[in-house]
Amino acid sequence: MATIESAVRAMLTTGTTLSASPYSIPDSRITHGFRLQDTVLPAITFECGEDERLSIGASPLRQVQVELRVIADTTQGALDILPGIIARAIPGTYDTYDFDCVTVLGHTVDGATVADGDENQPAELVCNIEIIYTE
Amino acid sequence: MALASTLSSISFGGTTIGAVGTATVSLSRPALDVTGIGATNSSFVTGVQSATATLDIFYDQADTTHVALEGNINGNSAAASTVLTLATGMTYTGNATVTSFEVTAQVGSAVRASVTLQFTGAISIG
Image 1 (cartoon, chains in turn blue, orange):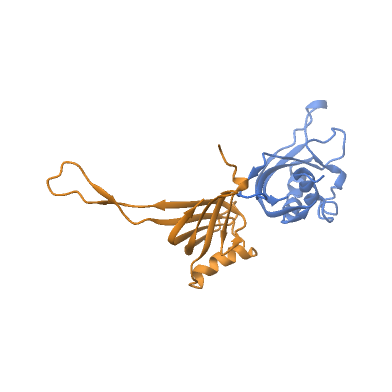
Image 2 (image 1 turned 120 degrees about the vertical axis):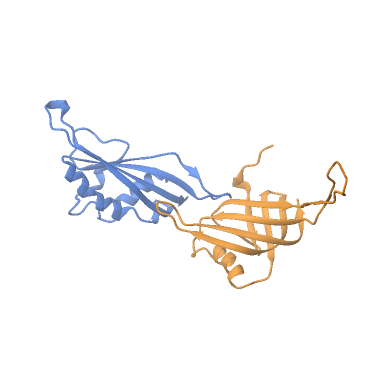
């Protein structure tokens, strides 16, 4: 059964925009919610916020805000993925859901922390996207 | 008993309009002041009723129902049957023309249009 989460993942993995060079993030590294700590970077995780109804009627327009996280070894490495995400954030039909309007709202970057052991932390770019869609 | 807006719709010219965020029908009958000179209290009689409908829609020129609404004002077309359905059997029905159609494109937001319809003649409720 299609869900907004599966549709968002389908949008990101459609074609080879993100999996091919220069981004080189295979579909298996685009996951909902979290990634395993020992997996290869860069990787993308995403979460969908509250699903809101925008219009009246039995088949309403819906709106959801998606928070994408790009995890990479370096700040520049995370920033380099951003154009690929913007290129994939486009209207279309994904997993039976019609994305009518996809808006990239903005992004922030949390730089990598170089330290010993567990204190070592990769860079994390957070990109917020608003999607208006119908089921 | 409350009604869910998932049961609601508005049609113009027999066609249900798509992607309507808000639909409002407003009935008004102004009070006419007939207070006489020297009176200590105001007196009013009821005036003539009029009605308007306003819509906030997620505008898309690929949606033929939006084009039909816009065409009514742009083509100076005649009034068309307009029905706001709240739920089955709960309706406001009349003939209306589109008197304003305002499209707004704003950064970080979906394109919207604000539409005003002026009813002519009687409004049937229910």
